[in-house]
Length: 343
Image (cartoon, rainbow, N blue to C red):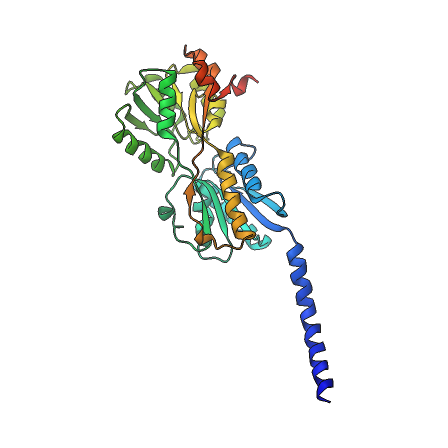
């Protein structure tokens, strides 16, 4: 009798466990859900390059289902627009229940990620200029990512090889919230380097003021360092599209210019040692792989910057400025041969 009762109990337990086991097997076969929240928009070389790199870093053998949400903070930049879009992104997290959220650039941290500190959902970021402590994510057990750190000295030295005698550097930028971090790093380096000096930092609000500063060059700079170029307002208070601003600067300014992102050189900036968008994303993808495949805790994976810099020279801009790069410079850099608007 006992044997019969024991067999009956075991049978009932197996029947109860079967649905759970079947569900577990189904879950194991389901592609992992990855929600990518872009601070900016697509198509955009910087944003899209990060996502391409992320997929490469995660690995093609990892079956993944992606959704992409664009916060579009450069074009929808008012506080009301940003909060509305951030609310939609957070609702998507609630509805879709991703296995991991991948965010790119600082705005997504401010608008979305920081609301999930300590959440069961793992978050991985890339392209972040700010300091994790000041962003409120340092030490978060469910968050890790890739910091973006500019190749300041390398960029200035590249410009100096193209245009000997460049020493006095002027920063021109919009007033987006994350630029003070970058400006602070440039200031710090300028104080410690004897071969260049920072003679001014201007962050005008209006496009007209930007144009005036660029043409007047009140600080007699030898070169401009262009940071933010999205948020300058026209006469109606709308953001001027950055390709329009870059084209105007190229056609009207005779001052050599530099920046840290290859998209700027495509749109007319003379040179820069660019942060690699692909490497940023690839490093983030490797962190996601460590979390999803190797089951490591996000908080155990350090937040570090990428190191690869890509020298980029716009040859058309060089010709316009009367600069003839040496063959060694051309061989060691990516060369842009024309302006985007002329294609």
